Length: 89
Image (cartoon, rainbow, N blue to C red):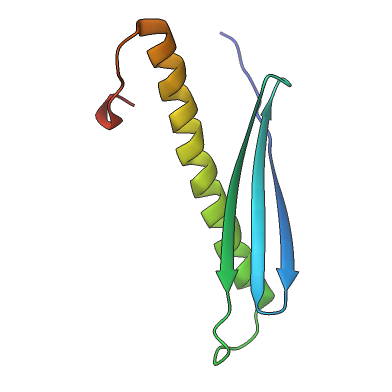
């Protein structure tokens, strides 16, 4: 059995009431996938920066996951020469 470890790095940038996150997966210097996410604090809400970080990061990771599924679908299609549907993944 082979165990592989993939590491995702998340960079979070806060600018006023806006928070931006970029999640980057680098696989053996052969594949890099980036997801992006953002959040905006409602001016009426209490300022709790961690919540903005959590939302932006979750959205970046979700975007990353969708992009990685797309990469996997393309890889499957290039080898099987058959279209891959969403239910096949």
